[in-house]
Image 1 (cartoon, rainbow, N blue to C red):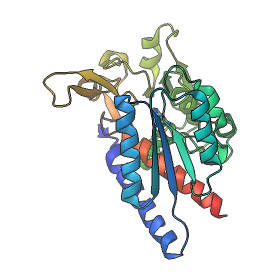
Image 2: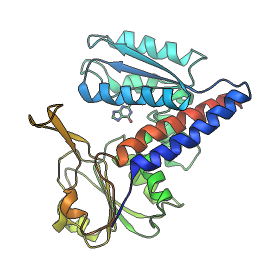
Image 3: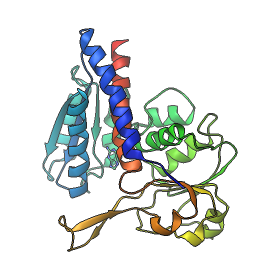
Image 4: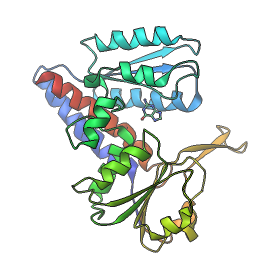
Length: 292
Ligand code: GUN
């Protein structure tokens, strides 16, 4: 069994980007500038956005955090989005999800300029991704593909079972894994909450990508020997014995499933850090596109 070490690979990617940014500076070019919009005070979102902004500083990007109060109206958020679209200093930006319930998420994501949509959430970018065109691929699926690539995991002709059909992970990764290429060329089954006999499907899977958000859902008796496991779940479980009052766990019963797996991502330290690295990569691509 080999651990797919997302922390290690994400650090490699960040080092590669750091070198490119230093070269941009030497050439007298503007360095990439990422902005993040956060509405409200959701604990997990605060952690993620903080981590994204800190990573920017470390690798030499400029960054701007726009933290708006929970009561922000949809109209005011849309104004903020238009301001970012029209600000030439900003190469790319993200609006952290989830948004408060009184704001229509779809409306906001639709308002983001596709050329600055480093999250790859805009229908233009999602559509391009589905059609094999060059675009911004959403950071989490992009990170999974990069992890498989750098560990040379064989996906060709394999049966991949994706659990979860979210717009951010399940749906896009199901498309990417089926596309021509390496990694790719996989036969994909997209399972979700209405799927019957999930265990029958996961038992046939060469690769399981779980993006469900149910702690330790995937058990050892649900997978076959030699399976490749990608665990996208990051759930906070309340625990008073921990300093933070919670611990983080994935969708996979790691201790037991890892005994049968050929490759497996840990949580934390697997897909999570890759997501940040690929967001930075997309921001670098946005800057390069603006230069050209
Ligand atoms: N919420 C959870 N994951 C993400 C992500 O990749 N981007 C944004 N903007 N919000 C998220």
